Image (cartoon, rainbow, N blue to C red; front, top):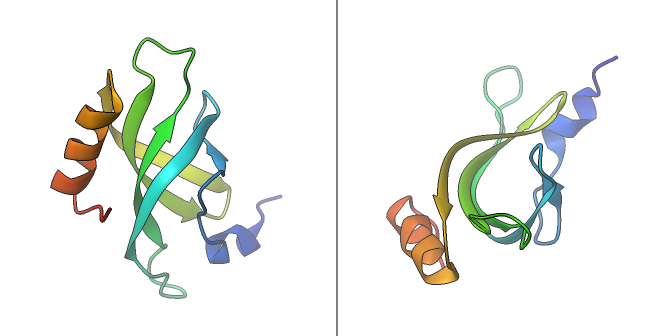
Length: 92
């Protein structure tokens, strides 16, 4: 059963997302949810230190089945991640 309440969730720093369980360390909300029309979305920097690319900048969408992470820019360091984040509209 799909949890439609997830559509109303707000992404927060510290949330765990993605298939590799990365932690959100920065985020900017890009779009509000419009009921029966579109889902809320964020640009976020996420990290998982054990990975070769420890940082990723994703578009994260609050879908009924959970967080959907897409359009990843994988980065070797935080400076590169912040540059991509700002380029994609993220605010620091």
